Image (cartoon, rainbow, N blue to C red; front, top):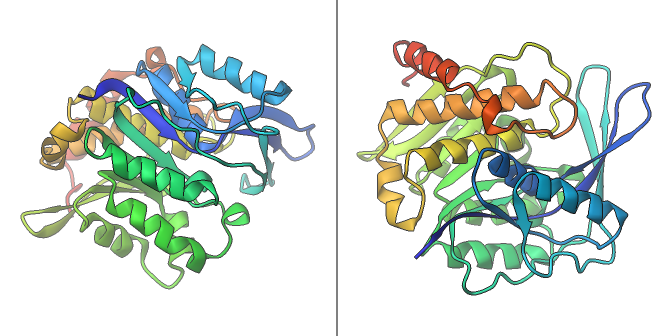
Length: 326
């Protein structure tokens, strides 16, 4: 029997962020950590299955996790040092990444059977931990909804042809995959991202394609036919930076599906059979949560008290009355 817990597996990093003309600032990061924090702040018990050092940076990260309601899997602080991501933002707001990373997946105690398991980014394809991530995800399918975000980082992942099969095998065992158009452009440079997303959905899961300020689209197979739903991005009053935007979207998407009561292996069919309006609602919730994150520096996802359900409901009503089906 699964417990009401999200297990997020992947790298933990200290982000060293450099804005033009400013001194660098450090902030706990890594896509999996950001998703775990996002879920914790939205009121969902979360456990981070990760690998970091018991050093000053590691202690700062632990404090950050504790404040956000996230626990660490036992043995997570056995690394020789805490990994870092150097993030440089140019005058146009574009981000460039470089990494110093150590990676291993500590064993999850046998009695812990999460409600949802999320895998993401570098740790899912970075050896020696990539095989450990896949084994953990595959073994969790009997009790958990599996969610995945490739969250491509070329500087740490190598060449597309070396990574593609690792990404595809995780997509094949995932119930929900969130991927950006930029990620698919790197993985399949000669292909249309929407066609790839539709093909991924043919594995039997829900695939959500994010397109920055052009919104998002969901793809799934229903009655043997490919189907897509599209929504606009969330309202953003003041843009600061995009660090953690996709991770906040992912946490928001899991949060929305959790509230609908369709997570857990025993609810797999119910999730796939969600009404179109429920899928649109989930995308709108995710988009609204991401829009809050980009209005402040670093990966700083919102707390549940900051999420205005009325605004989301109004957007769903407006969008679903318009041309969102394709």
